[in-house]
Image (cartoon, rainbow, N blue to C red; front, side):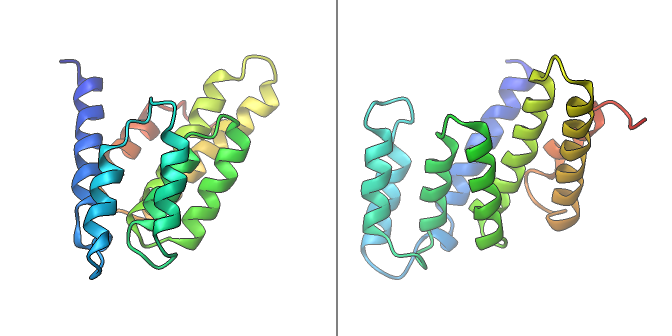
Length: 163
């Protein structure tokens, strides 16, 4: 197994462990049922989006799993600018919750991806690199003890040094 695959597996296992934490299990009887349905969803299935919508209708805004379902919906948005805007909004609304923390991590990865994909405009590319570094640095200052912190440090170390 490559180091990349191992890291990917660790992130997925952490995500599952976090989903099963007390934060996402409300006192109500249906929370466990909704959680089990959510965990069993296949993001590659054709009905994934509609199933997420169905689960979201079954939860309330203050339910522990609500932000995680929102995050799952956001992560499948094909337009990167809309996805980034929604991720930032999710982070603002749920800053201290697991999906809020992961949303800022996802913004940093998305910024890096956009920076890597930009082939033409050097000024835009420089701006994206700066924004990537800023988001990831902000992540470390806000969530230094997060599971994602080591990954963020690796991404930052792999970025070119500022000019």
